[in-house]
Amino acid sequence: MVITGQYDGTDSSEYDYIRRHHKHEVRENQCTSSIVKHIKAPVHLVWSLVRRFDQPQKYKPFVSGCNVQGDLEIGSVREVNVRSGLPATTSMERLELLNEEEHILGMRIVGGDHRLRVSLFSLTHTHTSQTSALCDDNYSADSNYSSIITLHPEIIDERPGTLVIESFVVDVPNGNTKDETCYFVEALIKCNLKSLADVSGRLAVQDRTESIVGV
Image (cartoon, rainbow, N blue to C red):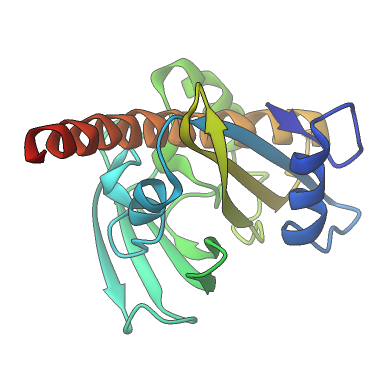
């Protein structure tokens, strides 16, 4: 589910979480959006993946590795290695926010060898043509991309689940509209969140199985 910033009939709790935790200062030449994902796994399992700023490859399918500068504190910078086949090989990202109690992580892209400083590591082959359209010479290297991801407990099918919300703000490239830019970035984030749901779901099944065996 994608929320563009105005109330559209979305569940009131989701809207409240977005209003509380996903505040971005958006300039005229920028776009912003929030993506919602319901995951059939408890918060502590999902957070165990999301909080690892030093190991995004645990659930981001197009990350091959990561090196971190710093002690995993606010201001730490990671160099993400992107898998071959994408229009980038590295992305430099700074940890802006980490709240262990409320399960919040914020980051900003501060460098890399791609023209579009967004989460290219979450790209799928389906979106290759869209990437080409946005990674042209008219796009500034300083796209001011930042994102916030929050996790919230909920019940799904009578089991502990997690509501995941990820929001972003990014510059709109010259020659592209806000809608085009948002659509592109949303597609990238959706890919990451789908993978997060898959990995978390497997961990949840494993956790339940081990609990039964241990009885």
